[in-house]
Image (cartoon, helix red, strand yellow):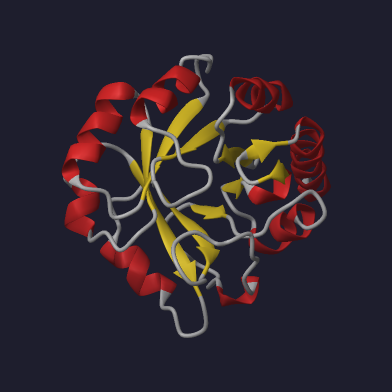
Length: 210
């Protein structure tokens, strides 16, 4: 099994190119104006045009109004949606597009019930529960993940080249998602950190081979 890699929160052409050179499978664009990594739908479209076939653009939305969701899909029509707020299953399904559903992991959170409610999701993205939305660059207790989640798991929250090998070994996610762990400052990716992260994921996969 190969762990897929999503690099999120890209804002610059050079960072998109560097992420592709490292072998990222998906590139995330944040359409949430309170984020330091926020871009407009038009800007996301311009950056997404740099992606080759088989690399997926992902549009991250947080309690977005329908007009923003429609504008985002018009701008990047082949994108995967990622809902990162308080969206209901009906709201996630309304665009009739494949989507990821973020789960804010913390003590007492019932991931299996959450997965049952969002069974139409392509995958669940597991992030730390912090004030506001997004993981804030914080890791969560991976032991909170039950052993038999019925949907593919994308491990997120405070990942970097130093801890992603352990995360993959313990969780065996379908994919990993990184943002602040490969940045020199908020919204500015570091090509060297992205390379080290992707190399670490490949080492973890190689170590898992029988």
